[in-house]
Length: 264
Image (cartoon, rainbow, N blue to C red; front, top):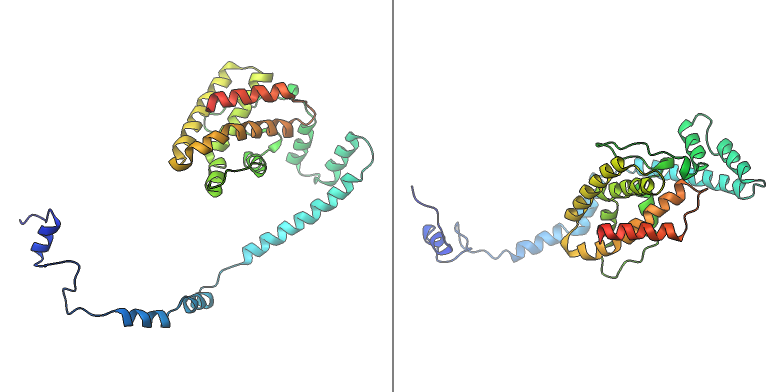
């Protein structure tokens, strides 16, 4: 059996060619007039028009979503007007919100409102689950908390914001926020070494996953800003989950020291 060519010269020799590429099946043809004809007959405008006429995009779902968003906006503004002008105590405002903004059948939402009245000392850690992240208090969503933090950040010129936001909102980053929040909650208010060790192990795994998924060209600037942003996101979670509690400068400083030590 003849061996395959091992070099470019052997390839040319095996095909009886002096040079390559060339037209092996006929004389060389000037294709420039053909290309010009194709460009005239099939311009970008003609192609776009053909696609528009024959491959229409379905916009029904987008339209429905836009209508729902507008309805929600109207409802939010109506409730906001009543709450802002409502006279009376804080308890009266909370009761009004419970009666007006939440449907009586929405038991989960009622639990949310009741939870906002609780202080951190009365709240218990739901428990570690190896295959599921522990939900944040008051039905807070980690992705929304991250989004709130990112809106107030000043990114350095030249950084790809889409890539940065994708990393901040990645599965590993979401897990880091939730597990770090609960680890710090236990550390400060309900110490439990066993639960904290489980959380710390998963925090380590999540950090490695985030590290390996970060492109090399953006890795340094991303991890320079990540501990500061994570500290803010954790603090924001405490602020939103326990509005009746006070978290002073000492709490902030200790939280930032811990996160910077872990990541930097």
